[in-house]
Amino acid sequence: MATNRPWETLSADGADIPIEQFVTTLVPQLASLMRRNVTGVYARQHGLTVPQWRLLALIARYSPLPFTDAVTLSGLDKGQISRTLRELQSSGLCTVEPDSSGNKKKVVCVISKAGLDRYQALVPVAQRKQVDLLAALSQSERRALYTSLIKLMQRCENP
Image 1: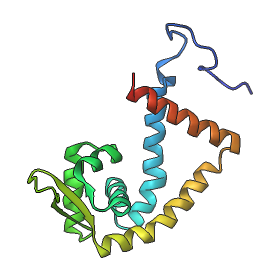
Image 2 (image 1 turned 30 degrees about the horizontal axis):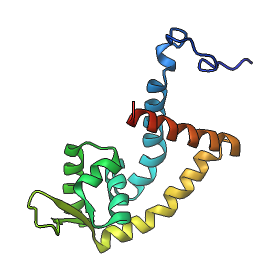
Image 3 (image 1 turned 180 degrees about the vertical axis):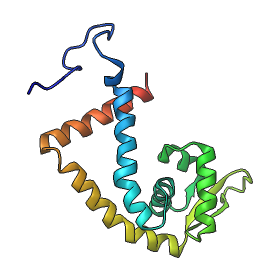
């Protein structure tokens, strides 16, 4: 069975790449599948949504986490961060406090004991799921994937 490799050779105008094989189509499709079938499964088992888990993990790692850093690191928009923070606060998993600089508009997210406990319970599960997912690739494929993702991220940050 021949493997379809639409990116192996590229025309200068990209006319040889069908829309359904655009990198900007395939990466979001993969991300959606991973959120739904990998991250979503273990997050739900621990009473969290995927955005709640993503934000809780960042707060646990970087507490106190400035709100602006939460936006940058999470890949979520400010509105979703605000909603998710309210949900985490109401569940007792974090608090939002004024920034130590005294600027009333700046806040930091601080992990609570309950939030840290939930995070510590979930991290080993998440790590095992990542290993399970990456085990589908050979070592050289994993290296190439990681290198390629970083290059594409850098390209998109500095067009």
